[in-house]
Image 1 (cartoon, rainbow, N blue to C red):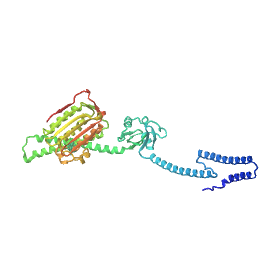
Image 2: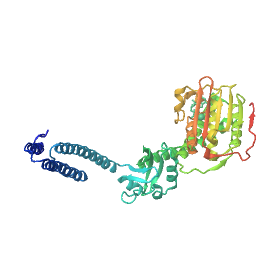
Image 3: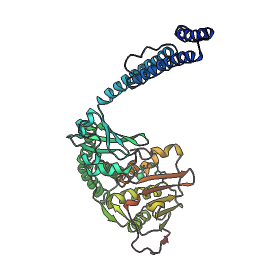
Image 4: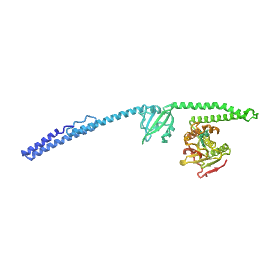
Length: 445
Ligand SMILES: Nc1ncnc2c1ncn2[C@@H]1O[C@H](COP(=O)(O)OP(=O)(O)O)[C@@H](O)[C@H]1O
Ligand SMILES: [Mg+2]
């Protein structure tokens, strides 16, 4: 605390003087003039300190002015506040600089976009991979700089859960996985991760499976052919040869199915672009019902409900194999006397669904999330006995993914299951005749 009394000394002396002048009764005029002079001196001192304060506020980084009296306190407190604030700011700036430095040298590309997708900031890896520049491109619309069609489409999707694979625009030998993260209400962060090595290993794995399957397929087909001939040949049944040949034939068929499924999966995994066609789903469902009847051989009641004549944009062969897998599963996992319903219908939001409902054994809830894993079966013995490969639902999942669709599984143990393939609106070609009657058709096998 500063001394408080000494600056009041001139004022006290001034008033003392006035008092003395009164005492000597030299006249009111003199007293008033002196009072005025003292007051003006007071006022001038405050004005001068105010001007000093004003000058300091304009440049607070300069030395705090010296104040007299109350002003000394005021300046002392202001100076202290300013230093504290300055220290806090320095610390914040230092950690911000550290953060920026770390983000700048991250191995992943980082681009911060504003609400209109203009570039607010980017790091070194983003410059390297995406060919952007921190000095040149800030404030530019990102889709003017990265003109890749699938990138632009992905950007407008606004679905943060979807990532995008693409070649690095500035380094085509690198494959990037792009992700979008929301930073704040009006900022998004684009992350670009180099997955070249991952892709390479994945391609090796895929090619290996495809090659092995392909190499095995020919000899297995030859063996199966001979066994088939033996099986059908009239020959004396010495020591049960016929029975063994029949078993061998069954096993070679199993291997052939396995190889076919592995090859199908390798193809679905590997193919980048899919050839789209307009698929007549109602016709497909009818023909699947025929296949189901021949597989069931009269053991089940098979019902078809075609509630829409809508077609799908997709790959006919793949949809046939996916939907066919759901149908054959229903037949194979439903005891004789059960009912199987195939249904094609539109859904809310103009999507469509193909569902297969059965009154079979049902599936315990803990298995459901794992059914689409390769070789996952609830009951391995039962799957084998009915000729399953354990790859069917994995194929279904892949095919649906390639059509931006999803598989939904509902099941109650002892009551039955419903497997539904959900397809998005942009793949559905609505019925040409808007008043086309729905054609529920029921047929007992
Ligand atoms: N409709 C169904 N009812 C009961 N279980 C089913 C049904 N469909 C599939 N499953 C179970 O899911 C497993 C995986 O199916 P899938 O991938 O098609 O292989 P699989 O070749 O064994 O049929 C099956 O082994 C079976 O346990
Ligand atoms: Mg199957």
